[in-house]
Image (tube, rainbow, N blue to C red):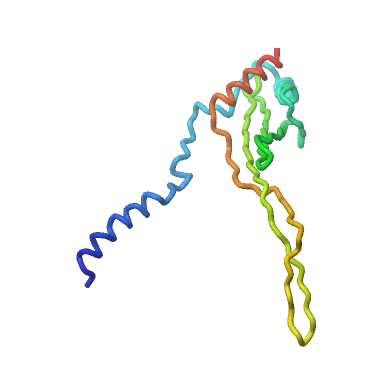
Length: 167
């Protein structure tokens, strides 16, 4: 049997460990019908999609068109010499009722410059091997995070610009 002091000390530790465990993402997904990711236009699908392309181009995005109904825009940011951020916006254009709907999804990818050293090794049969530090350090951009942009204002600003381009 465990001493009561040990059990008393263990309960707060277990409680803190349970609080530190992140909640599964699917539990916070709402599937809200008032989605910020879609916008209706009173024009045809082609005109709406072209307006989306022009809106992205006007803001400095590099735009690719994998298909007639899909656009992907990418813009690169470097907040400081050690970090880089890429914003990728995907648009899907569809026909809806008497007009068109554009579904937008933006992803923010974050990268950091990480330095890593390298070493050179020499192996001689029968004698063993030796590893020497190499003087040069190489630096690589390492992905440190990625998330879907969920900011409603971001999508409202984008769709407001597309509305101007449609007219």
